[in-house]
Figure (cartoon, rainbow, N blue to C red):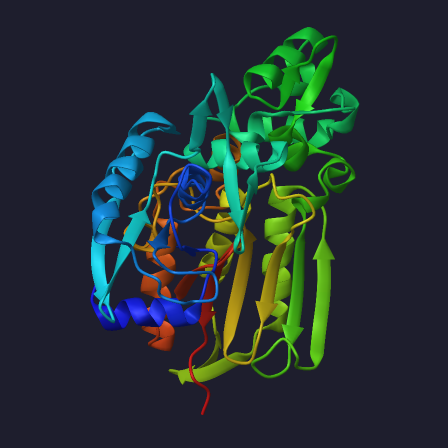
Length: 394
């Protein structure tokens, strides 16, 4: 890093990805900050810079000890162990140590006195992760799948038997309705719609989301909110607003119809007939919504999928960021990691998604042909936003 780049970082101050440390001692350790950055999106720690952005520098005879201390902590107390990027940058005649950390093996923790402690970063502060935040970190690592979790206070009575029967008869070729009750229950458990609780059979998260009579009764975050604004900003006049709280398959079908009704249509003469043309093909709409439903983070309570329509674009905002190893470039080339594999299986069976990572490449390919502008994927603080641009209107 050159001197000008470092000065720019210092001018911008501390943030969710930048921490200043004037000195490094046993009383002012660094390991909590490192773990919190690793469990977020990585970050930089500048040693020799005070909280008020004053460059104090590190003394020459302290540099070796600081480097050894950092490397030892990254190997011995931070787990899984990491190798950080370490460099010394000279600024205004002073030395600043720049430590940059990134990790894909979340969740990271401190291991001291035979105890594991997980830390996360919220803005410029570091704190111990709550149970829900910890669950989210493990889900991001792929070590647990939230859609297989049991739903407390639920039972088979909360599953819509007509929807289950229709699915197994149409997509599995079973005469499900005529099976003995015990055999039906076993099929639902093996399909991860139901699961064994301590003393009774309960529904899974996937079961409630896919076949629940009232999914929002148990999972308030399960729905989709749609809003159509006049102009290009959320502050614009509200043209239409809908909220959907049914099963995933029903929500996908219904929101697609709502979007189609709100889209403008153009037409052209082909031969002797006038042909109506939509701004976004139905296949693209369905795939974009299905992707949001099957890949969203359902551990974020109360956060619904939000679909915003503007004059120039459609935005589909899905709660959560991609799992550890998935980047925007990965998604564009078809790389996919399933956060909710049970849900993915059923939605693919319903033919509501392309499957095998083909969805995003298809959306990009189709919309570039129509609008001439590539759809954009934004990874926000706790949300993934797919932006599909309309063809520029004349």
